[in-house]
Length: 463
Image (cartoon, rainbow, N blue to C red; front, top):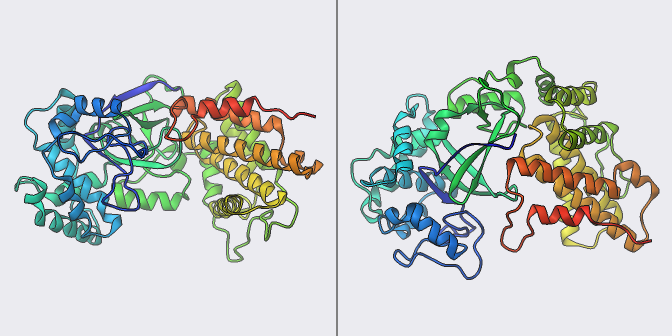
């Protein structure tokens, strides 16, 4: 668990853009958010970086053969002719076409290009509306081909079909925000999909690093999740069939394990009455309340990530907690209600002076979301770790605000709002993110996960 399985530079990658499509908001090398003063390539004057170190590393690793080969401003102009949702596809298509045309390239890129030719386009299986979208993107590319600097022999639709079902989204190594897009054919070829994968990747310093989320035995298949495993089973099956052109037969979808049984429960519909979750607040005046199963699931997660234990015991413990719950309290629909409640509380906290009840409801809803994450994701997935960390910070801030205003009800301990819970959640986040992310890395203006955990674990109240 936590070992690096594979590390390679993508065939092509580019950072996610900000609100203005023509303005880069992230480093071209590490995808970190750009500071106000940002270095840029001295030759093309278009590629921007978060630091001199990233600029130097990017040049020696790949930019030296990419620089001046394509006019990024022409790509920006082409993107503006398309709807925003199609612009990443155009950038990926143009970048792959350009990269495939280079004559002299390093060994790692030769490997990626060979893998690219082994990918299947599935062009005959794409729905007509998708092909129509690709045709529009290809038309714009062909219109700007000479300005961009592409040769005239590449088939843009073929590239779009091949990359459309083999791309990856990169996320910040110290947070759940998407930071960029990757095309890595070798990873696509080697690692198949599972809705409950035993590996995940992190994008760090221009490298796609695949790490083990669990102890993998010799002979076991290494898998990644091609889509969000929290979605109901029928939604996952339809999307995997429509986008990746296969029927998922992983254990979570077709097996009889404890996790497969939990997945069946999560995939239930609410029924014709459409009842809301039992404890979901209609307003934030009513006293906060939490169901016992939520705290039990969180305790199982904390114990597993702190003391170890088998996945079988962890999964069976989850099933024992949620197996008898009705759909209104445990289902994907119930999860979405609690996620909306969490987001609403966080928005209220950030925008106005709120009561202790709203802060407490924010903590409760965050714990519900964490419990759902624990039930559907691998325990060492980074998303679970980040939710642990955010919940820990929410509980701490709520306790501090209540201590300062002398509004800390005794009932809050029963909700799990305690200093001990703050510290255990923080340490759990640290253990998870050491496996699946980079907790020592800090984004511009943010503390690293390690620093946040150290602060939370060292807190105390003065009587």
